Each structure stands twice: as structure tokens, then as C-alpha cells.
Length: 113
Image (cartoon, rainbow, N blue to C red; front, side, top):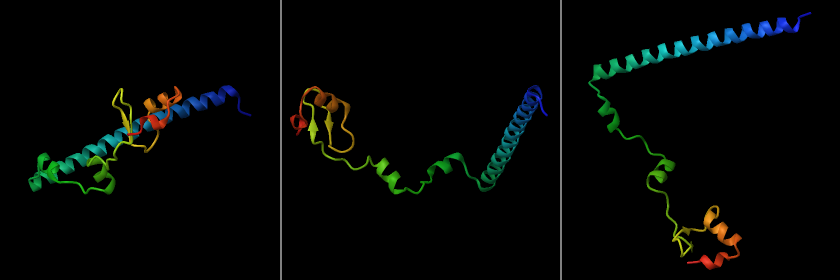
């Protein structure tokens, strides 16, 4: 039968072993990464490619990326707070300024543009 103290000692030994394995993994990752970087640098030198050359190519644009970069589709506001000029299109969650105004007794129709 194993005692509590023996189990604690085994746990400590395993934790020490795990920490050493983590250190070895990190070192192997650093070494592999350095090798890949050197390989890339060699290929770039061989083909006369510079960092600037890498930045000139445009990545293919996905539909989502296109929307995000184009600012998305704008929807005209339907509600406006005349005192602050804040607006809401009526899509998505109600903005906090509108929620607060409704909670204070005003009606949504009061803000209709």
C-alpha cells in the first residue's frame, strides 16, 4: 500500500519531469524555428527576394475581408437623439443611450427620424 507521503513524492517527481519536458519542447521549437528562418533567408537570397517584395503581393480577399475593409454596408439611421446627435439604424441591439432613454419613460417613436 502506498502512503500519502510517497504519493506526494511521486507527484513532485512527475511535475519536475513535466517541467523538464516543457523546457525541452520549447528549446526544440526555438531550434526548429531558427532552422526554418535560415532556410527562408537562404531561399530569399537565392532568388533575390527582399522583405519589400513580400509586402507588395496582395493576399486574396475573402467576402468577409472585403466587407470589413470596405466598411461594410451602411444602413441609414432610423432613430436619433437630437440632444446628442447619436443615431441607431434599428439593427442589432439597442444602443445604451436609447435603452436609458426608454427606461426613463420616453418612447422609441420619440427618436424616429
